[in-house]
Image 1 (cartoon, rainbow, N blue to C red):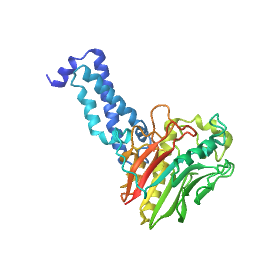
Image 2 (cartoon, rainbow, N blue to C red):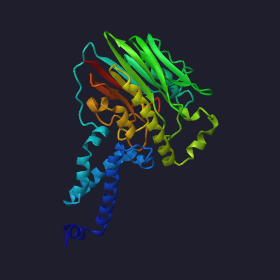
Image 3 (spheres, rainbow, N blue to C red):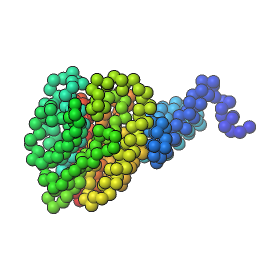
Length: 355
């Protein structure tokens, strides 16, 4: 009698059911492992699995513990899955931080999707703009990248002598902004077809060095309506909510792929060391993440700690905002601020040094 059949016979009916679900989970997890290497336009529906890969990893961990306590060989199934996916685990949770010694020539980059500084009272607070301004003053970043920026909110950031703000929209004016303590010697924007999302960039002179900073805001996956969804019809937000979530996410992933390809092509023409930051609206397990990151360093992976949560998602600590740095730029520290609740996103900050 084959060993597998013998082992199955020794299982109770409940454990047989558990083992069946464990096998299904294993198949789905391995599929999610492969998806970052497959373009979403070919498998848009399956690409949704990359969003819930963290949940798959957690469930595999629970299955491993479940079988381990019973001293069952079935623990090897989820054990192998977790070992093979160790690089994915590091993208979801960092067990230790390797912060470097701070030096005078370090500079700090902050990225934050401010959701129009709560212009439409999504949060039941009156002073969101003031709190964000105070937070920026306290953290004192040298380069500040803001997504979903609003000039209407009148948040005073005049402490920054150099800035590039690109606004768009008719009924609702929203934009991307880069603020810098260092001179901006060139700037521009990258617009996407059939989308209100965009990227702005600035070439910033720091001492004798010049660095290119991209501030991105990619297509929303539309789990909840964002600012760009309201551009065409302010009164139709609830209609969007009624659409099937999976269908909407699949369509958004296909758009994100095109947007990522446009950014990758643009950055290939840049000879400066670069930093890419902002709201990617996708997980670190996605094709889009892998494309944009390329050979850059993910600052969270380098020196982050914990989950690095950047988005207020109720099911698990989601990380969809990033700071990527060129290999020639040393990453000294990285921090996210999930306790600073003045948007649906959380600020992220990295301390860097040009080597």
